[in-house]
Length: 92
Image (cartoon, rainbow, N blue to C red; front, side, top):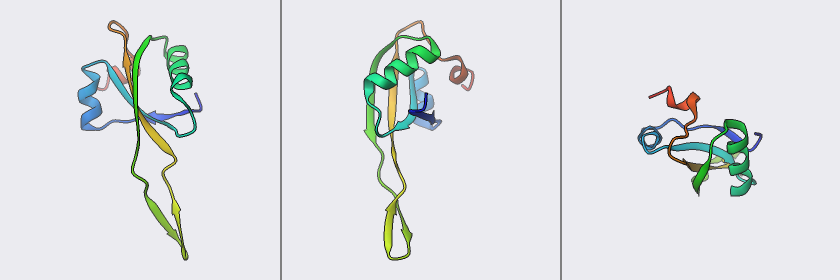
């Protein structure tokens, strides 16, 4: 579970919970099959679809050098009907 950083709770992600889609930030180096395996193994659910996108890079100045601070991407995971992740379902 090192690849999944944390669940994202925004207005859009709360709307997606109604469609059985869960949003989380993951390590940028991990691929879809690893994330799918981790989610299915850890939560005991069946994943039918995954969408991901890279977040805009934010820079931070350290003296004369600009350092990039965002080293993760956002993953939207769609579960099979009838499955849910109870920790996030109790929020709404």
